[in-house]
Image 1 (cartoon, rainbow, N blue to C red):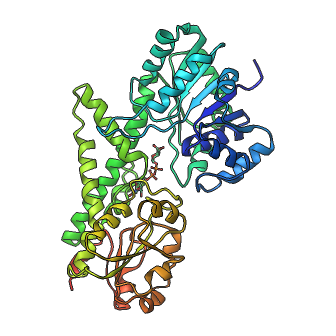
Image 2: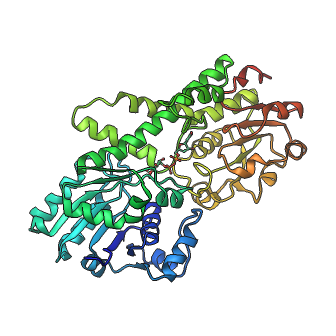
Image 3: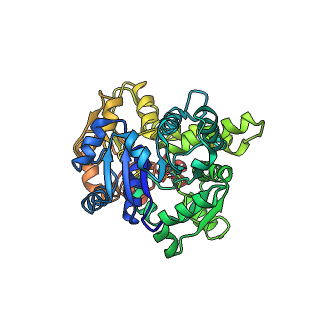
Amino acid sequence: MNTPPLIAVIGTGYVGLAAGAGLAEFGNTVVCVDIDSKKIESLQNGIMPIFEPGLKELVERNVEQERLLFTTDIVDTLQDADAIFIAVGTPMNDDGSADLSALYDVIHSIGKVINKYTVIVTKSTVPVGTGACIRHILEDIYAIDSCMFDIVSNPEFLREGSAIKDFLKPDRLVIGTESVDACTTLCRIYDSLLKEGTPCVFTDVATAEIIKYASNAFLATKVSFINEIANLCDATGGNAQTVAYAMGLDHRISPYFLKPGPGYGGYCFPKDTQALIHIATTYNVPMNTVQGAIAANVYQQQVSLKKLLHLTNNLLQGKTVAILGLAFKANTDDVRQSPSITLIQELKKYDVTINAYDPEAMRSMAQMFPDVHYCQSAYEALTGADAALIMTNWDEFKHLNTKRVASLMAEKIIVDMHNILDLTQLRALGFLCDGIGQGSLLHSTR
Ligand code: UGA
């Protein structure tokens, strides 16, 4: 009973990899499984499939200490494991619902091989009721006795770009299960975090499943809310950063996640807000605030183009536009649902030449837009450009030498969608420029 539980982590995406390496770091023995043999082979050779700060070092350390293994052999891994963490993707279907096919494939694999008591843990973001469905499949289709397994919902709250830090030092753990045995197993797995005093919410499976969607939808709503306030500030002359600062001093609101920008993107918020609405609709429950957050975000992803058109006097045809930042946020190479995608799609309608630069995300974006001119540096992208937009809040853009930028650009026009640069300084250098929520539309008319 004192040997630590053997953990299988199924899926080696952001969550699976970070969770696998993180659980090993907590002292557990972890086997990570993926059906993608190329990915597994790369991981076995120490090559990470994603850019994530600290991941490579964490994987290397735990592989070296023989706590972390990578394999494609799902059958043996499932049979041996005491706890199976499912971390496969749950992408969005066309109707907004979560596509659970990869998750149910895993459950069917488990159903075929399980031969001893196993704790089945969903790390993937799944709609409420999924845990109950898993139980139904195993008991009714595979005739597995209910005492042979327990279901736990243990949602993950890590963010891309800080996944390792978030996994190793989470704000809270959520362990949703109706079983005391499963709860004990999870407590052993997370022993080091619990000893450090990490708050842990013990609840039932359904509540844990809802906590994950509610958290993401609330955060998305927070971003959409401040973006709408920023747009109002632009129209009226207020300053959204000061508004957010003052709002955040109220403990009930908090200062975090109140930065206006080009609209939220990424894998999670867009799909999880839609999935929450889909499941609520199934039960005839209105979800108006989340609907509003989505609508506000669709609008927000157009704001950068509106600002550019304003500053260029609607004369974009034939111009060269530099886009600094392609990833949906800093410290990731992920471009899924990135505001830069919407911008590029819109700019293409104007027959402009697009120079793009991102420290990590150019390879992913080139798969979608091969005809964009990808540059080796921000300065190369800005050379000869008639206008520039900062679309991702990468640190290196904060340190741009604005005098050099002024000398490189054909026309000095900048839209800074993350308020990284000092507009007053830019204006002193002769730029026509705009940030977000700085009331600056009033000052930037040509
Ligand atoms: C999000 C959640 O924050 C995680 O807790 C969750 O685990 C994850 O989804 C998931 O479900 O897997 P992530 O999508 O990696 O994490 O990125 P965030 O840092 O949350 O940013 C989401 C979007 O909101 C980005 O486009 C970001 O630029 C934007 N954002 C964030 C703002 O525009 N303003 C802010 O103040 C904060």
